[in-house]
Length: 357
Image (cartoon, rainbow, N blue to C red; front, side, top):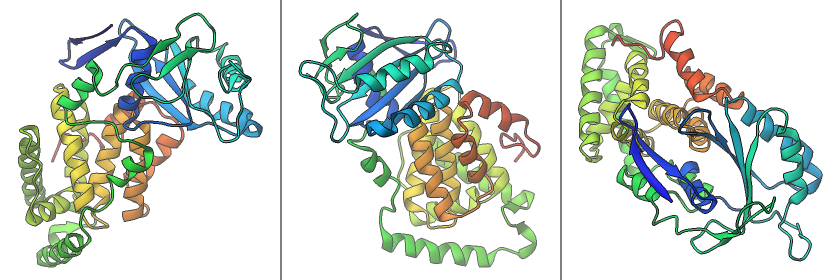
């Protein structure tokens, strides 16, 4: 049975009590529907057993299993937790399971052995694909088998859809969401941005930093866009994109925007994240790095490492060596926990979480 409650911070808590429901939730937790994958769901300690992070990898060739297991275990043990659920989806290329058995049993044994001294393994599940009606099985034989519910018709799906988010069919489709929406429009906005930058008095800004008056204007533009986003309005004119691109190239304003990932109102946080995504698709480089980095930070804070990684790659392609994207990429690669990341940014000199415009 799945149920929802509201936490003391106003955020929605979705409780999953069945392995089939947990499997159906994986596409929503990853932002895309995985295939031929091994997925580790880290359950944080405490009453709610929050799932963070979700770690996914392609099913490895048998000769690369030891290396893959080391990487997966290293990633999950960077995060505090009270247990892990392992979900194997499909089978890897060329893999053949014995008749009647589940695939990749040796990989699963290696994972359990590597985790046993540090993190209990709650469930180890296999499913041919994450689709409604697919039959899941348990490697241990201590649960199931069962049927995966339609992941489009669950409480988790309804909760996410209410916030404007649905999982994509594949990682490739998710990646395409960050691509420019219209190349002609991108070129047009590039010319508009260049003209706007030319109009600025050289004394009003240094790279990434504007004078106080201009920063106040930028902050006002961002606040107005966020207010529209919370109301469900994500339409952006060329002028809006140019104005927000300039605002998010202002280091002080961009750093203030990091706080939107931790709004007490979860719907407001997701609206801000959706706004950053829309701006990634509409903003020319190198200014595109600003919203792409904010999108990455928001995804990282809620444990969506896949989207965070894609967004950071996007930012660094737009602006190699970007001053915020680069350290965030390093944090992600070193598996710094989302909560630890917030503590670092709050107290870092100069303040990624600066409260002063």
